[in-house]
View 1: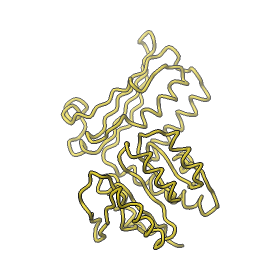
View 2 (view 1 turned 30 degrees about the vertical axis):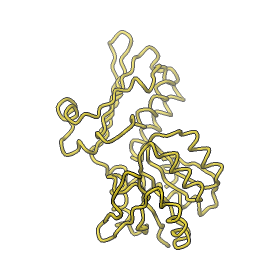
View 3 (view 1 turned 180 degrees about the horizontal axis):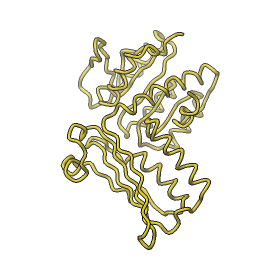
Amino acid sequence: MDRIKVMVNGMPGNMASNIAKHVLNDDRFELIPLSLTGPEILEKEYNIASVCISLINPEQRNEAIKTLKKKENNFISVDYTHPLAVNSNAEFFCNNFLPFVMGTTGGDRKKLEDAIISSGICAVIAPNMAKQIVGFQAMMEYASKTFPDLFNGYTLTIKESHQKGKADTSGTARAMIGYFNKLGIPFNDYQIIMERDPENQKEIWGIPEEFIKGHGWHTYTLVSGDKTVKFEFTHNINGRDVYVAGTLDAIVYLNNRINEGAKGKIFSMIDVLKGI
């Protein structure tokens, strides 16, 4: 079977670099030695093992992609760039008919979806690529639809901690709010307690020092009105490797759907879990 050609964007960022390393070492894929990056990146090249990746800034990307498409024909792009670049990157992929997997949170999600549908390309979009967390979210979605208002009268506290460099509030935490709302608990994004201070993370949260620069800790606490009942859901991730397997599965899933003739479709990680 032909290997799937993959361009991983966002290098030399940690997540993009980690994905690229695994793509390079997986026989299912062929890593394209080019990565779209942000205007703040001064480097021109980045090495993954023995492969030299050319870093392409926004001013160069139109010409670079035009050349790349002539050379490689069909390939899948992976986007792990800054949240502020979500919509501009998606528009670029759509305008150039490049199917993509996007694991970046942030941006105008409605605008993102509209751009994909109107372009005719396909994409997998998810705020979280960790398969087990996506499965947990699916369970919460089922509960919210099957047992509406189950926690009516309860109060909710959501706490999340990520590395200092994460610019926005956790997309996973925001997604969970919708399920808790349907379960009868009023709650808004601004009520999420967000931690980005490394000292607090180490001293108060107890996050291991080696993972301060790469982690995702979440706790959802529900307390009854009379304070006699407490439920707590926690998922703590150290490092970034857990997101890799989901991203690679998403690439394979998207490639399969494209080969089946899908056009203008947006897939979620739940679709990926069901389809592989």
